[in-house]
Amino acid sequence: MRPVVDLKVRVLQVRQVLRGATVGYGATWTAKRDSRVAVIAAGYADGVMRSPNPSDANVKREVIIAGARCPMIGRISMDLMAVDVTDLPANAVRRDQMATLIGEGLGIDEVAAQTGTIGYEVLTSLGRRFHRVWKVD
Image (cartoon, rainbow, N blue to C red; front, side, top):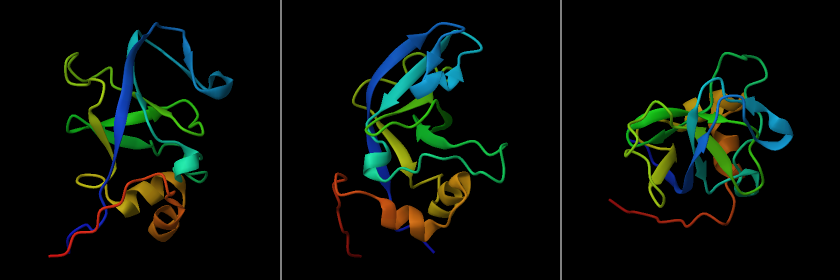
């Protein structure tokens, strides 16, 4: 079977975060090293689930940027999320680049497992602010 959903969102900015600085509401993520953080244009108002999988604290929530899996960090806000891109080459991530939330390399069932739910809930939660394109083969 082929994937039928591809969800991409724009990188709004890439910021340097010094070791010890925090990211997210309530300072929920603290940089353990000097880091680079990409701010992504999607949040819970768009249907991105806020919570990680409550039954497995070891499951990381990820997005794909520049062909690599990158962990979400901090708390997801209404319109934005932060992604740690420190391990990517410095020029690999830039403003206006697209990040994959669901799609090639990150299937809907894996995204659902990262939040402790099912793919159907992820799909039906996606908000109206996403531009939709239907393709017929």
